[in-house]
Length: 364
Ligand code: SAM
Image 1 (cartoon, rainbow, N blue to C red):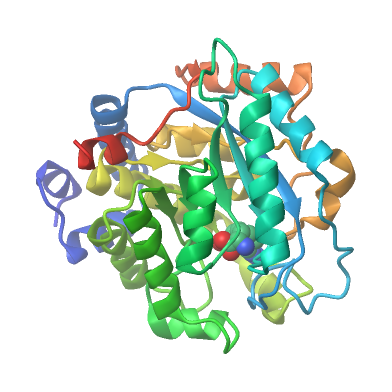
Image 2 (cartoon, rainbow, N blue to C red):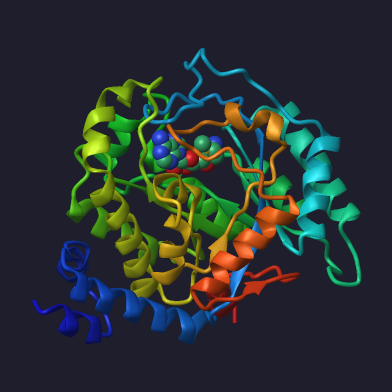
């Protein structure tokens, strides 16, 4: 079907989404990008919201076949930042005008770890209350699959957003990508529990796995819609050599441009289908091309998550090859980010939580 006609429809079918993801020429891509931008402007505005990101531990109980910090990778020095270090990153986030904070780590669900996270979250909240932020920093957590009780304790501690990527909505592919202890059904169930508890729920997929098809990706978009998801964080899959999927390195290099383009087309399609959700333009896009995150913003993304982890641990949170070791907390990085965002005609939402409009709309 002609792309212009698909973009005029109110509801897109699986086939329509496949056609959009298969766009391979500049004029059609421009139509897709402009439509996504228009929808973003209408439903979310043009501001880009900021979250200071702290990757506070790389200790992980999982053995995902793609991930550089998987349990079996012995070339990683494991760390857990202490409360002081996480508080320092949170304060830096506030200082920079980034009113939201993302705490991400490897998967752990032991009581000692959950107690630690709760203690830190309460301290972060307390330390960041001000006239500008009467409820302190907005906090998003991303520490993997948990029990209902753990999620409830985390919610009660003051966390109001949670990110848990489904990685792929193709159950067979999910199984190939993960160890036998991990289950697709449990992942879906966790997303349901999070929603039940009242979190703003984020999920996403990796784009460009070997064996992943355009049909799979189109199904992923419809999965986000069916699950009524509030936030999307997705990005290209990038090979890490010290993983079972390291053997795909040459294949990945050869398909880099195609994978990147698919990554930004997925952002545009998600914006068109899901309309009022928050969509992050992720580090993986920037790892592939210097202006990767700006390209994501032009396709309808409205969230950036600048790095706020201490520089000393950056190299130990290497999920994939070429992950930038950026320290984005210093003055020149902040100015650079601002310049980049302004260069594409957008402004930054300083001192605002920037919650998902979708969450607000579905709770009206
Ligand atoms: N443990 C938490 C979880 O699983 O939700 C958070 C940490 S996990 C490392 C964060 C995300 O990194 C994963 O959901 C996955 O999508 C992404 N990731 C891991 N390895 C990657 C790779 N090789 N390329 C791109 N993204 C990757």
